[in-house]
Image 1 (cartoon, rainbow, N blue to C red):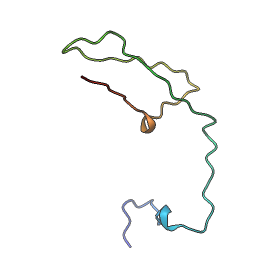
Image 2: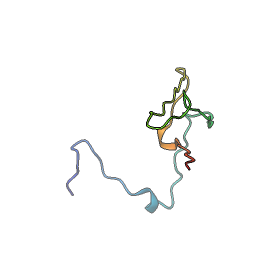
Image 3: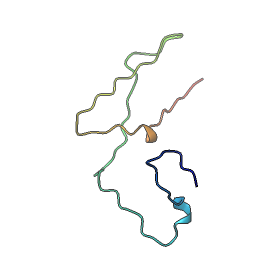
Length: 72
């Protein structure tokens, strides 16, 4: 079987691995959702900008980031 990368090893799709105990994620201690509002009021043709500040202890999870838009 040819592999995509020379350093890559074979593995099974996790959906087919029915009998082993999956690993436990221990890196993330807690999570939270935070509402962030635009910096300025909305105007026709103007960009919508957000300021997202964080410290070195926080991680921004873009996979679980949501943008809720209500338009008329």
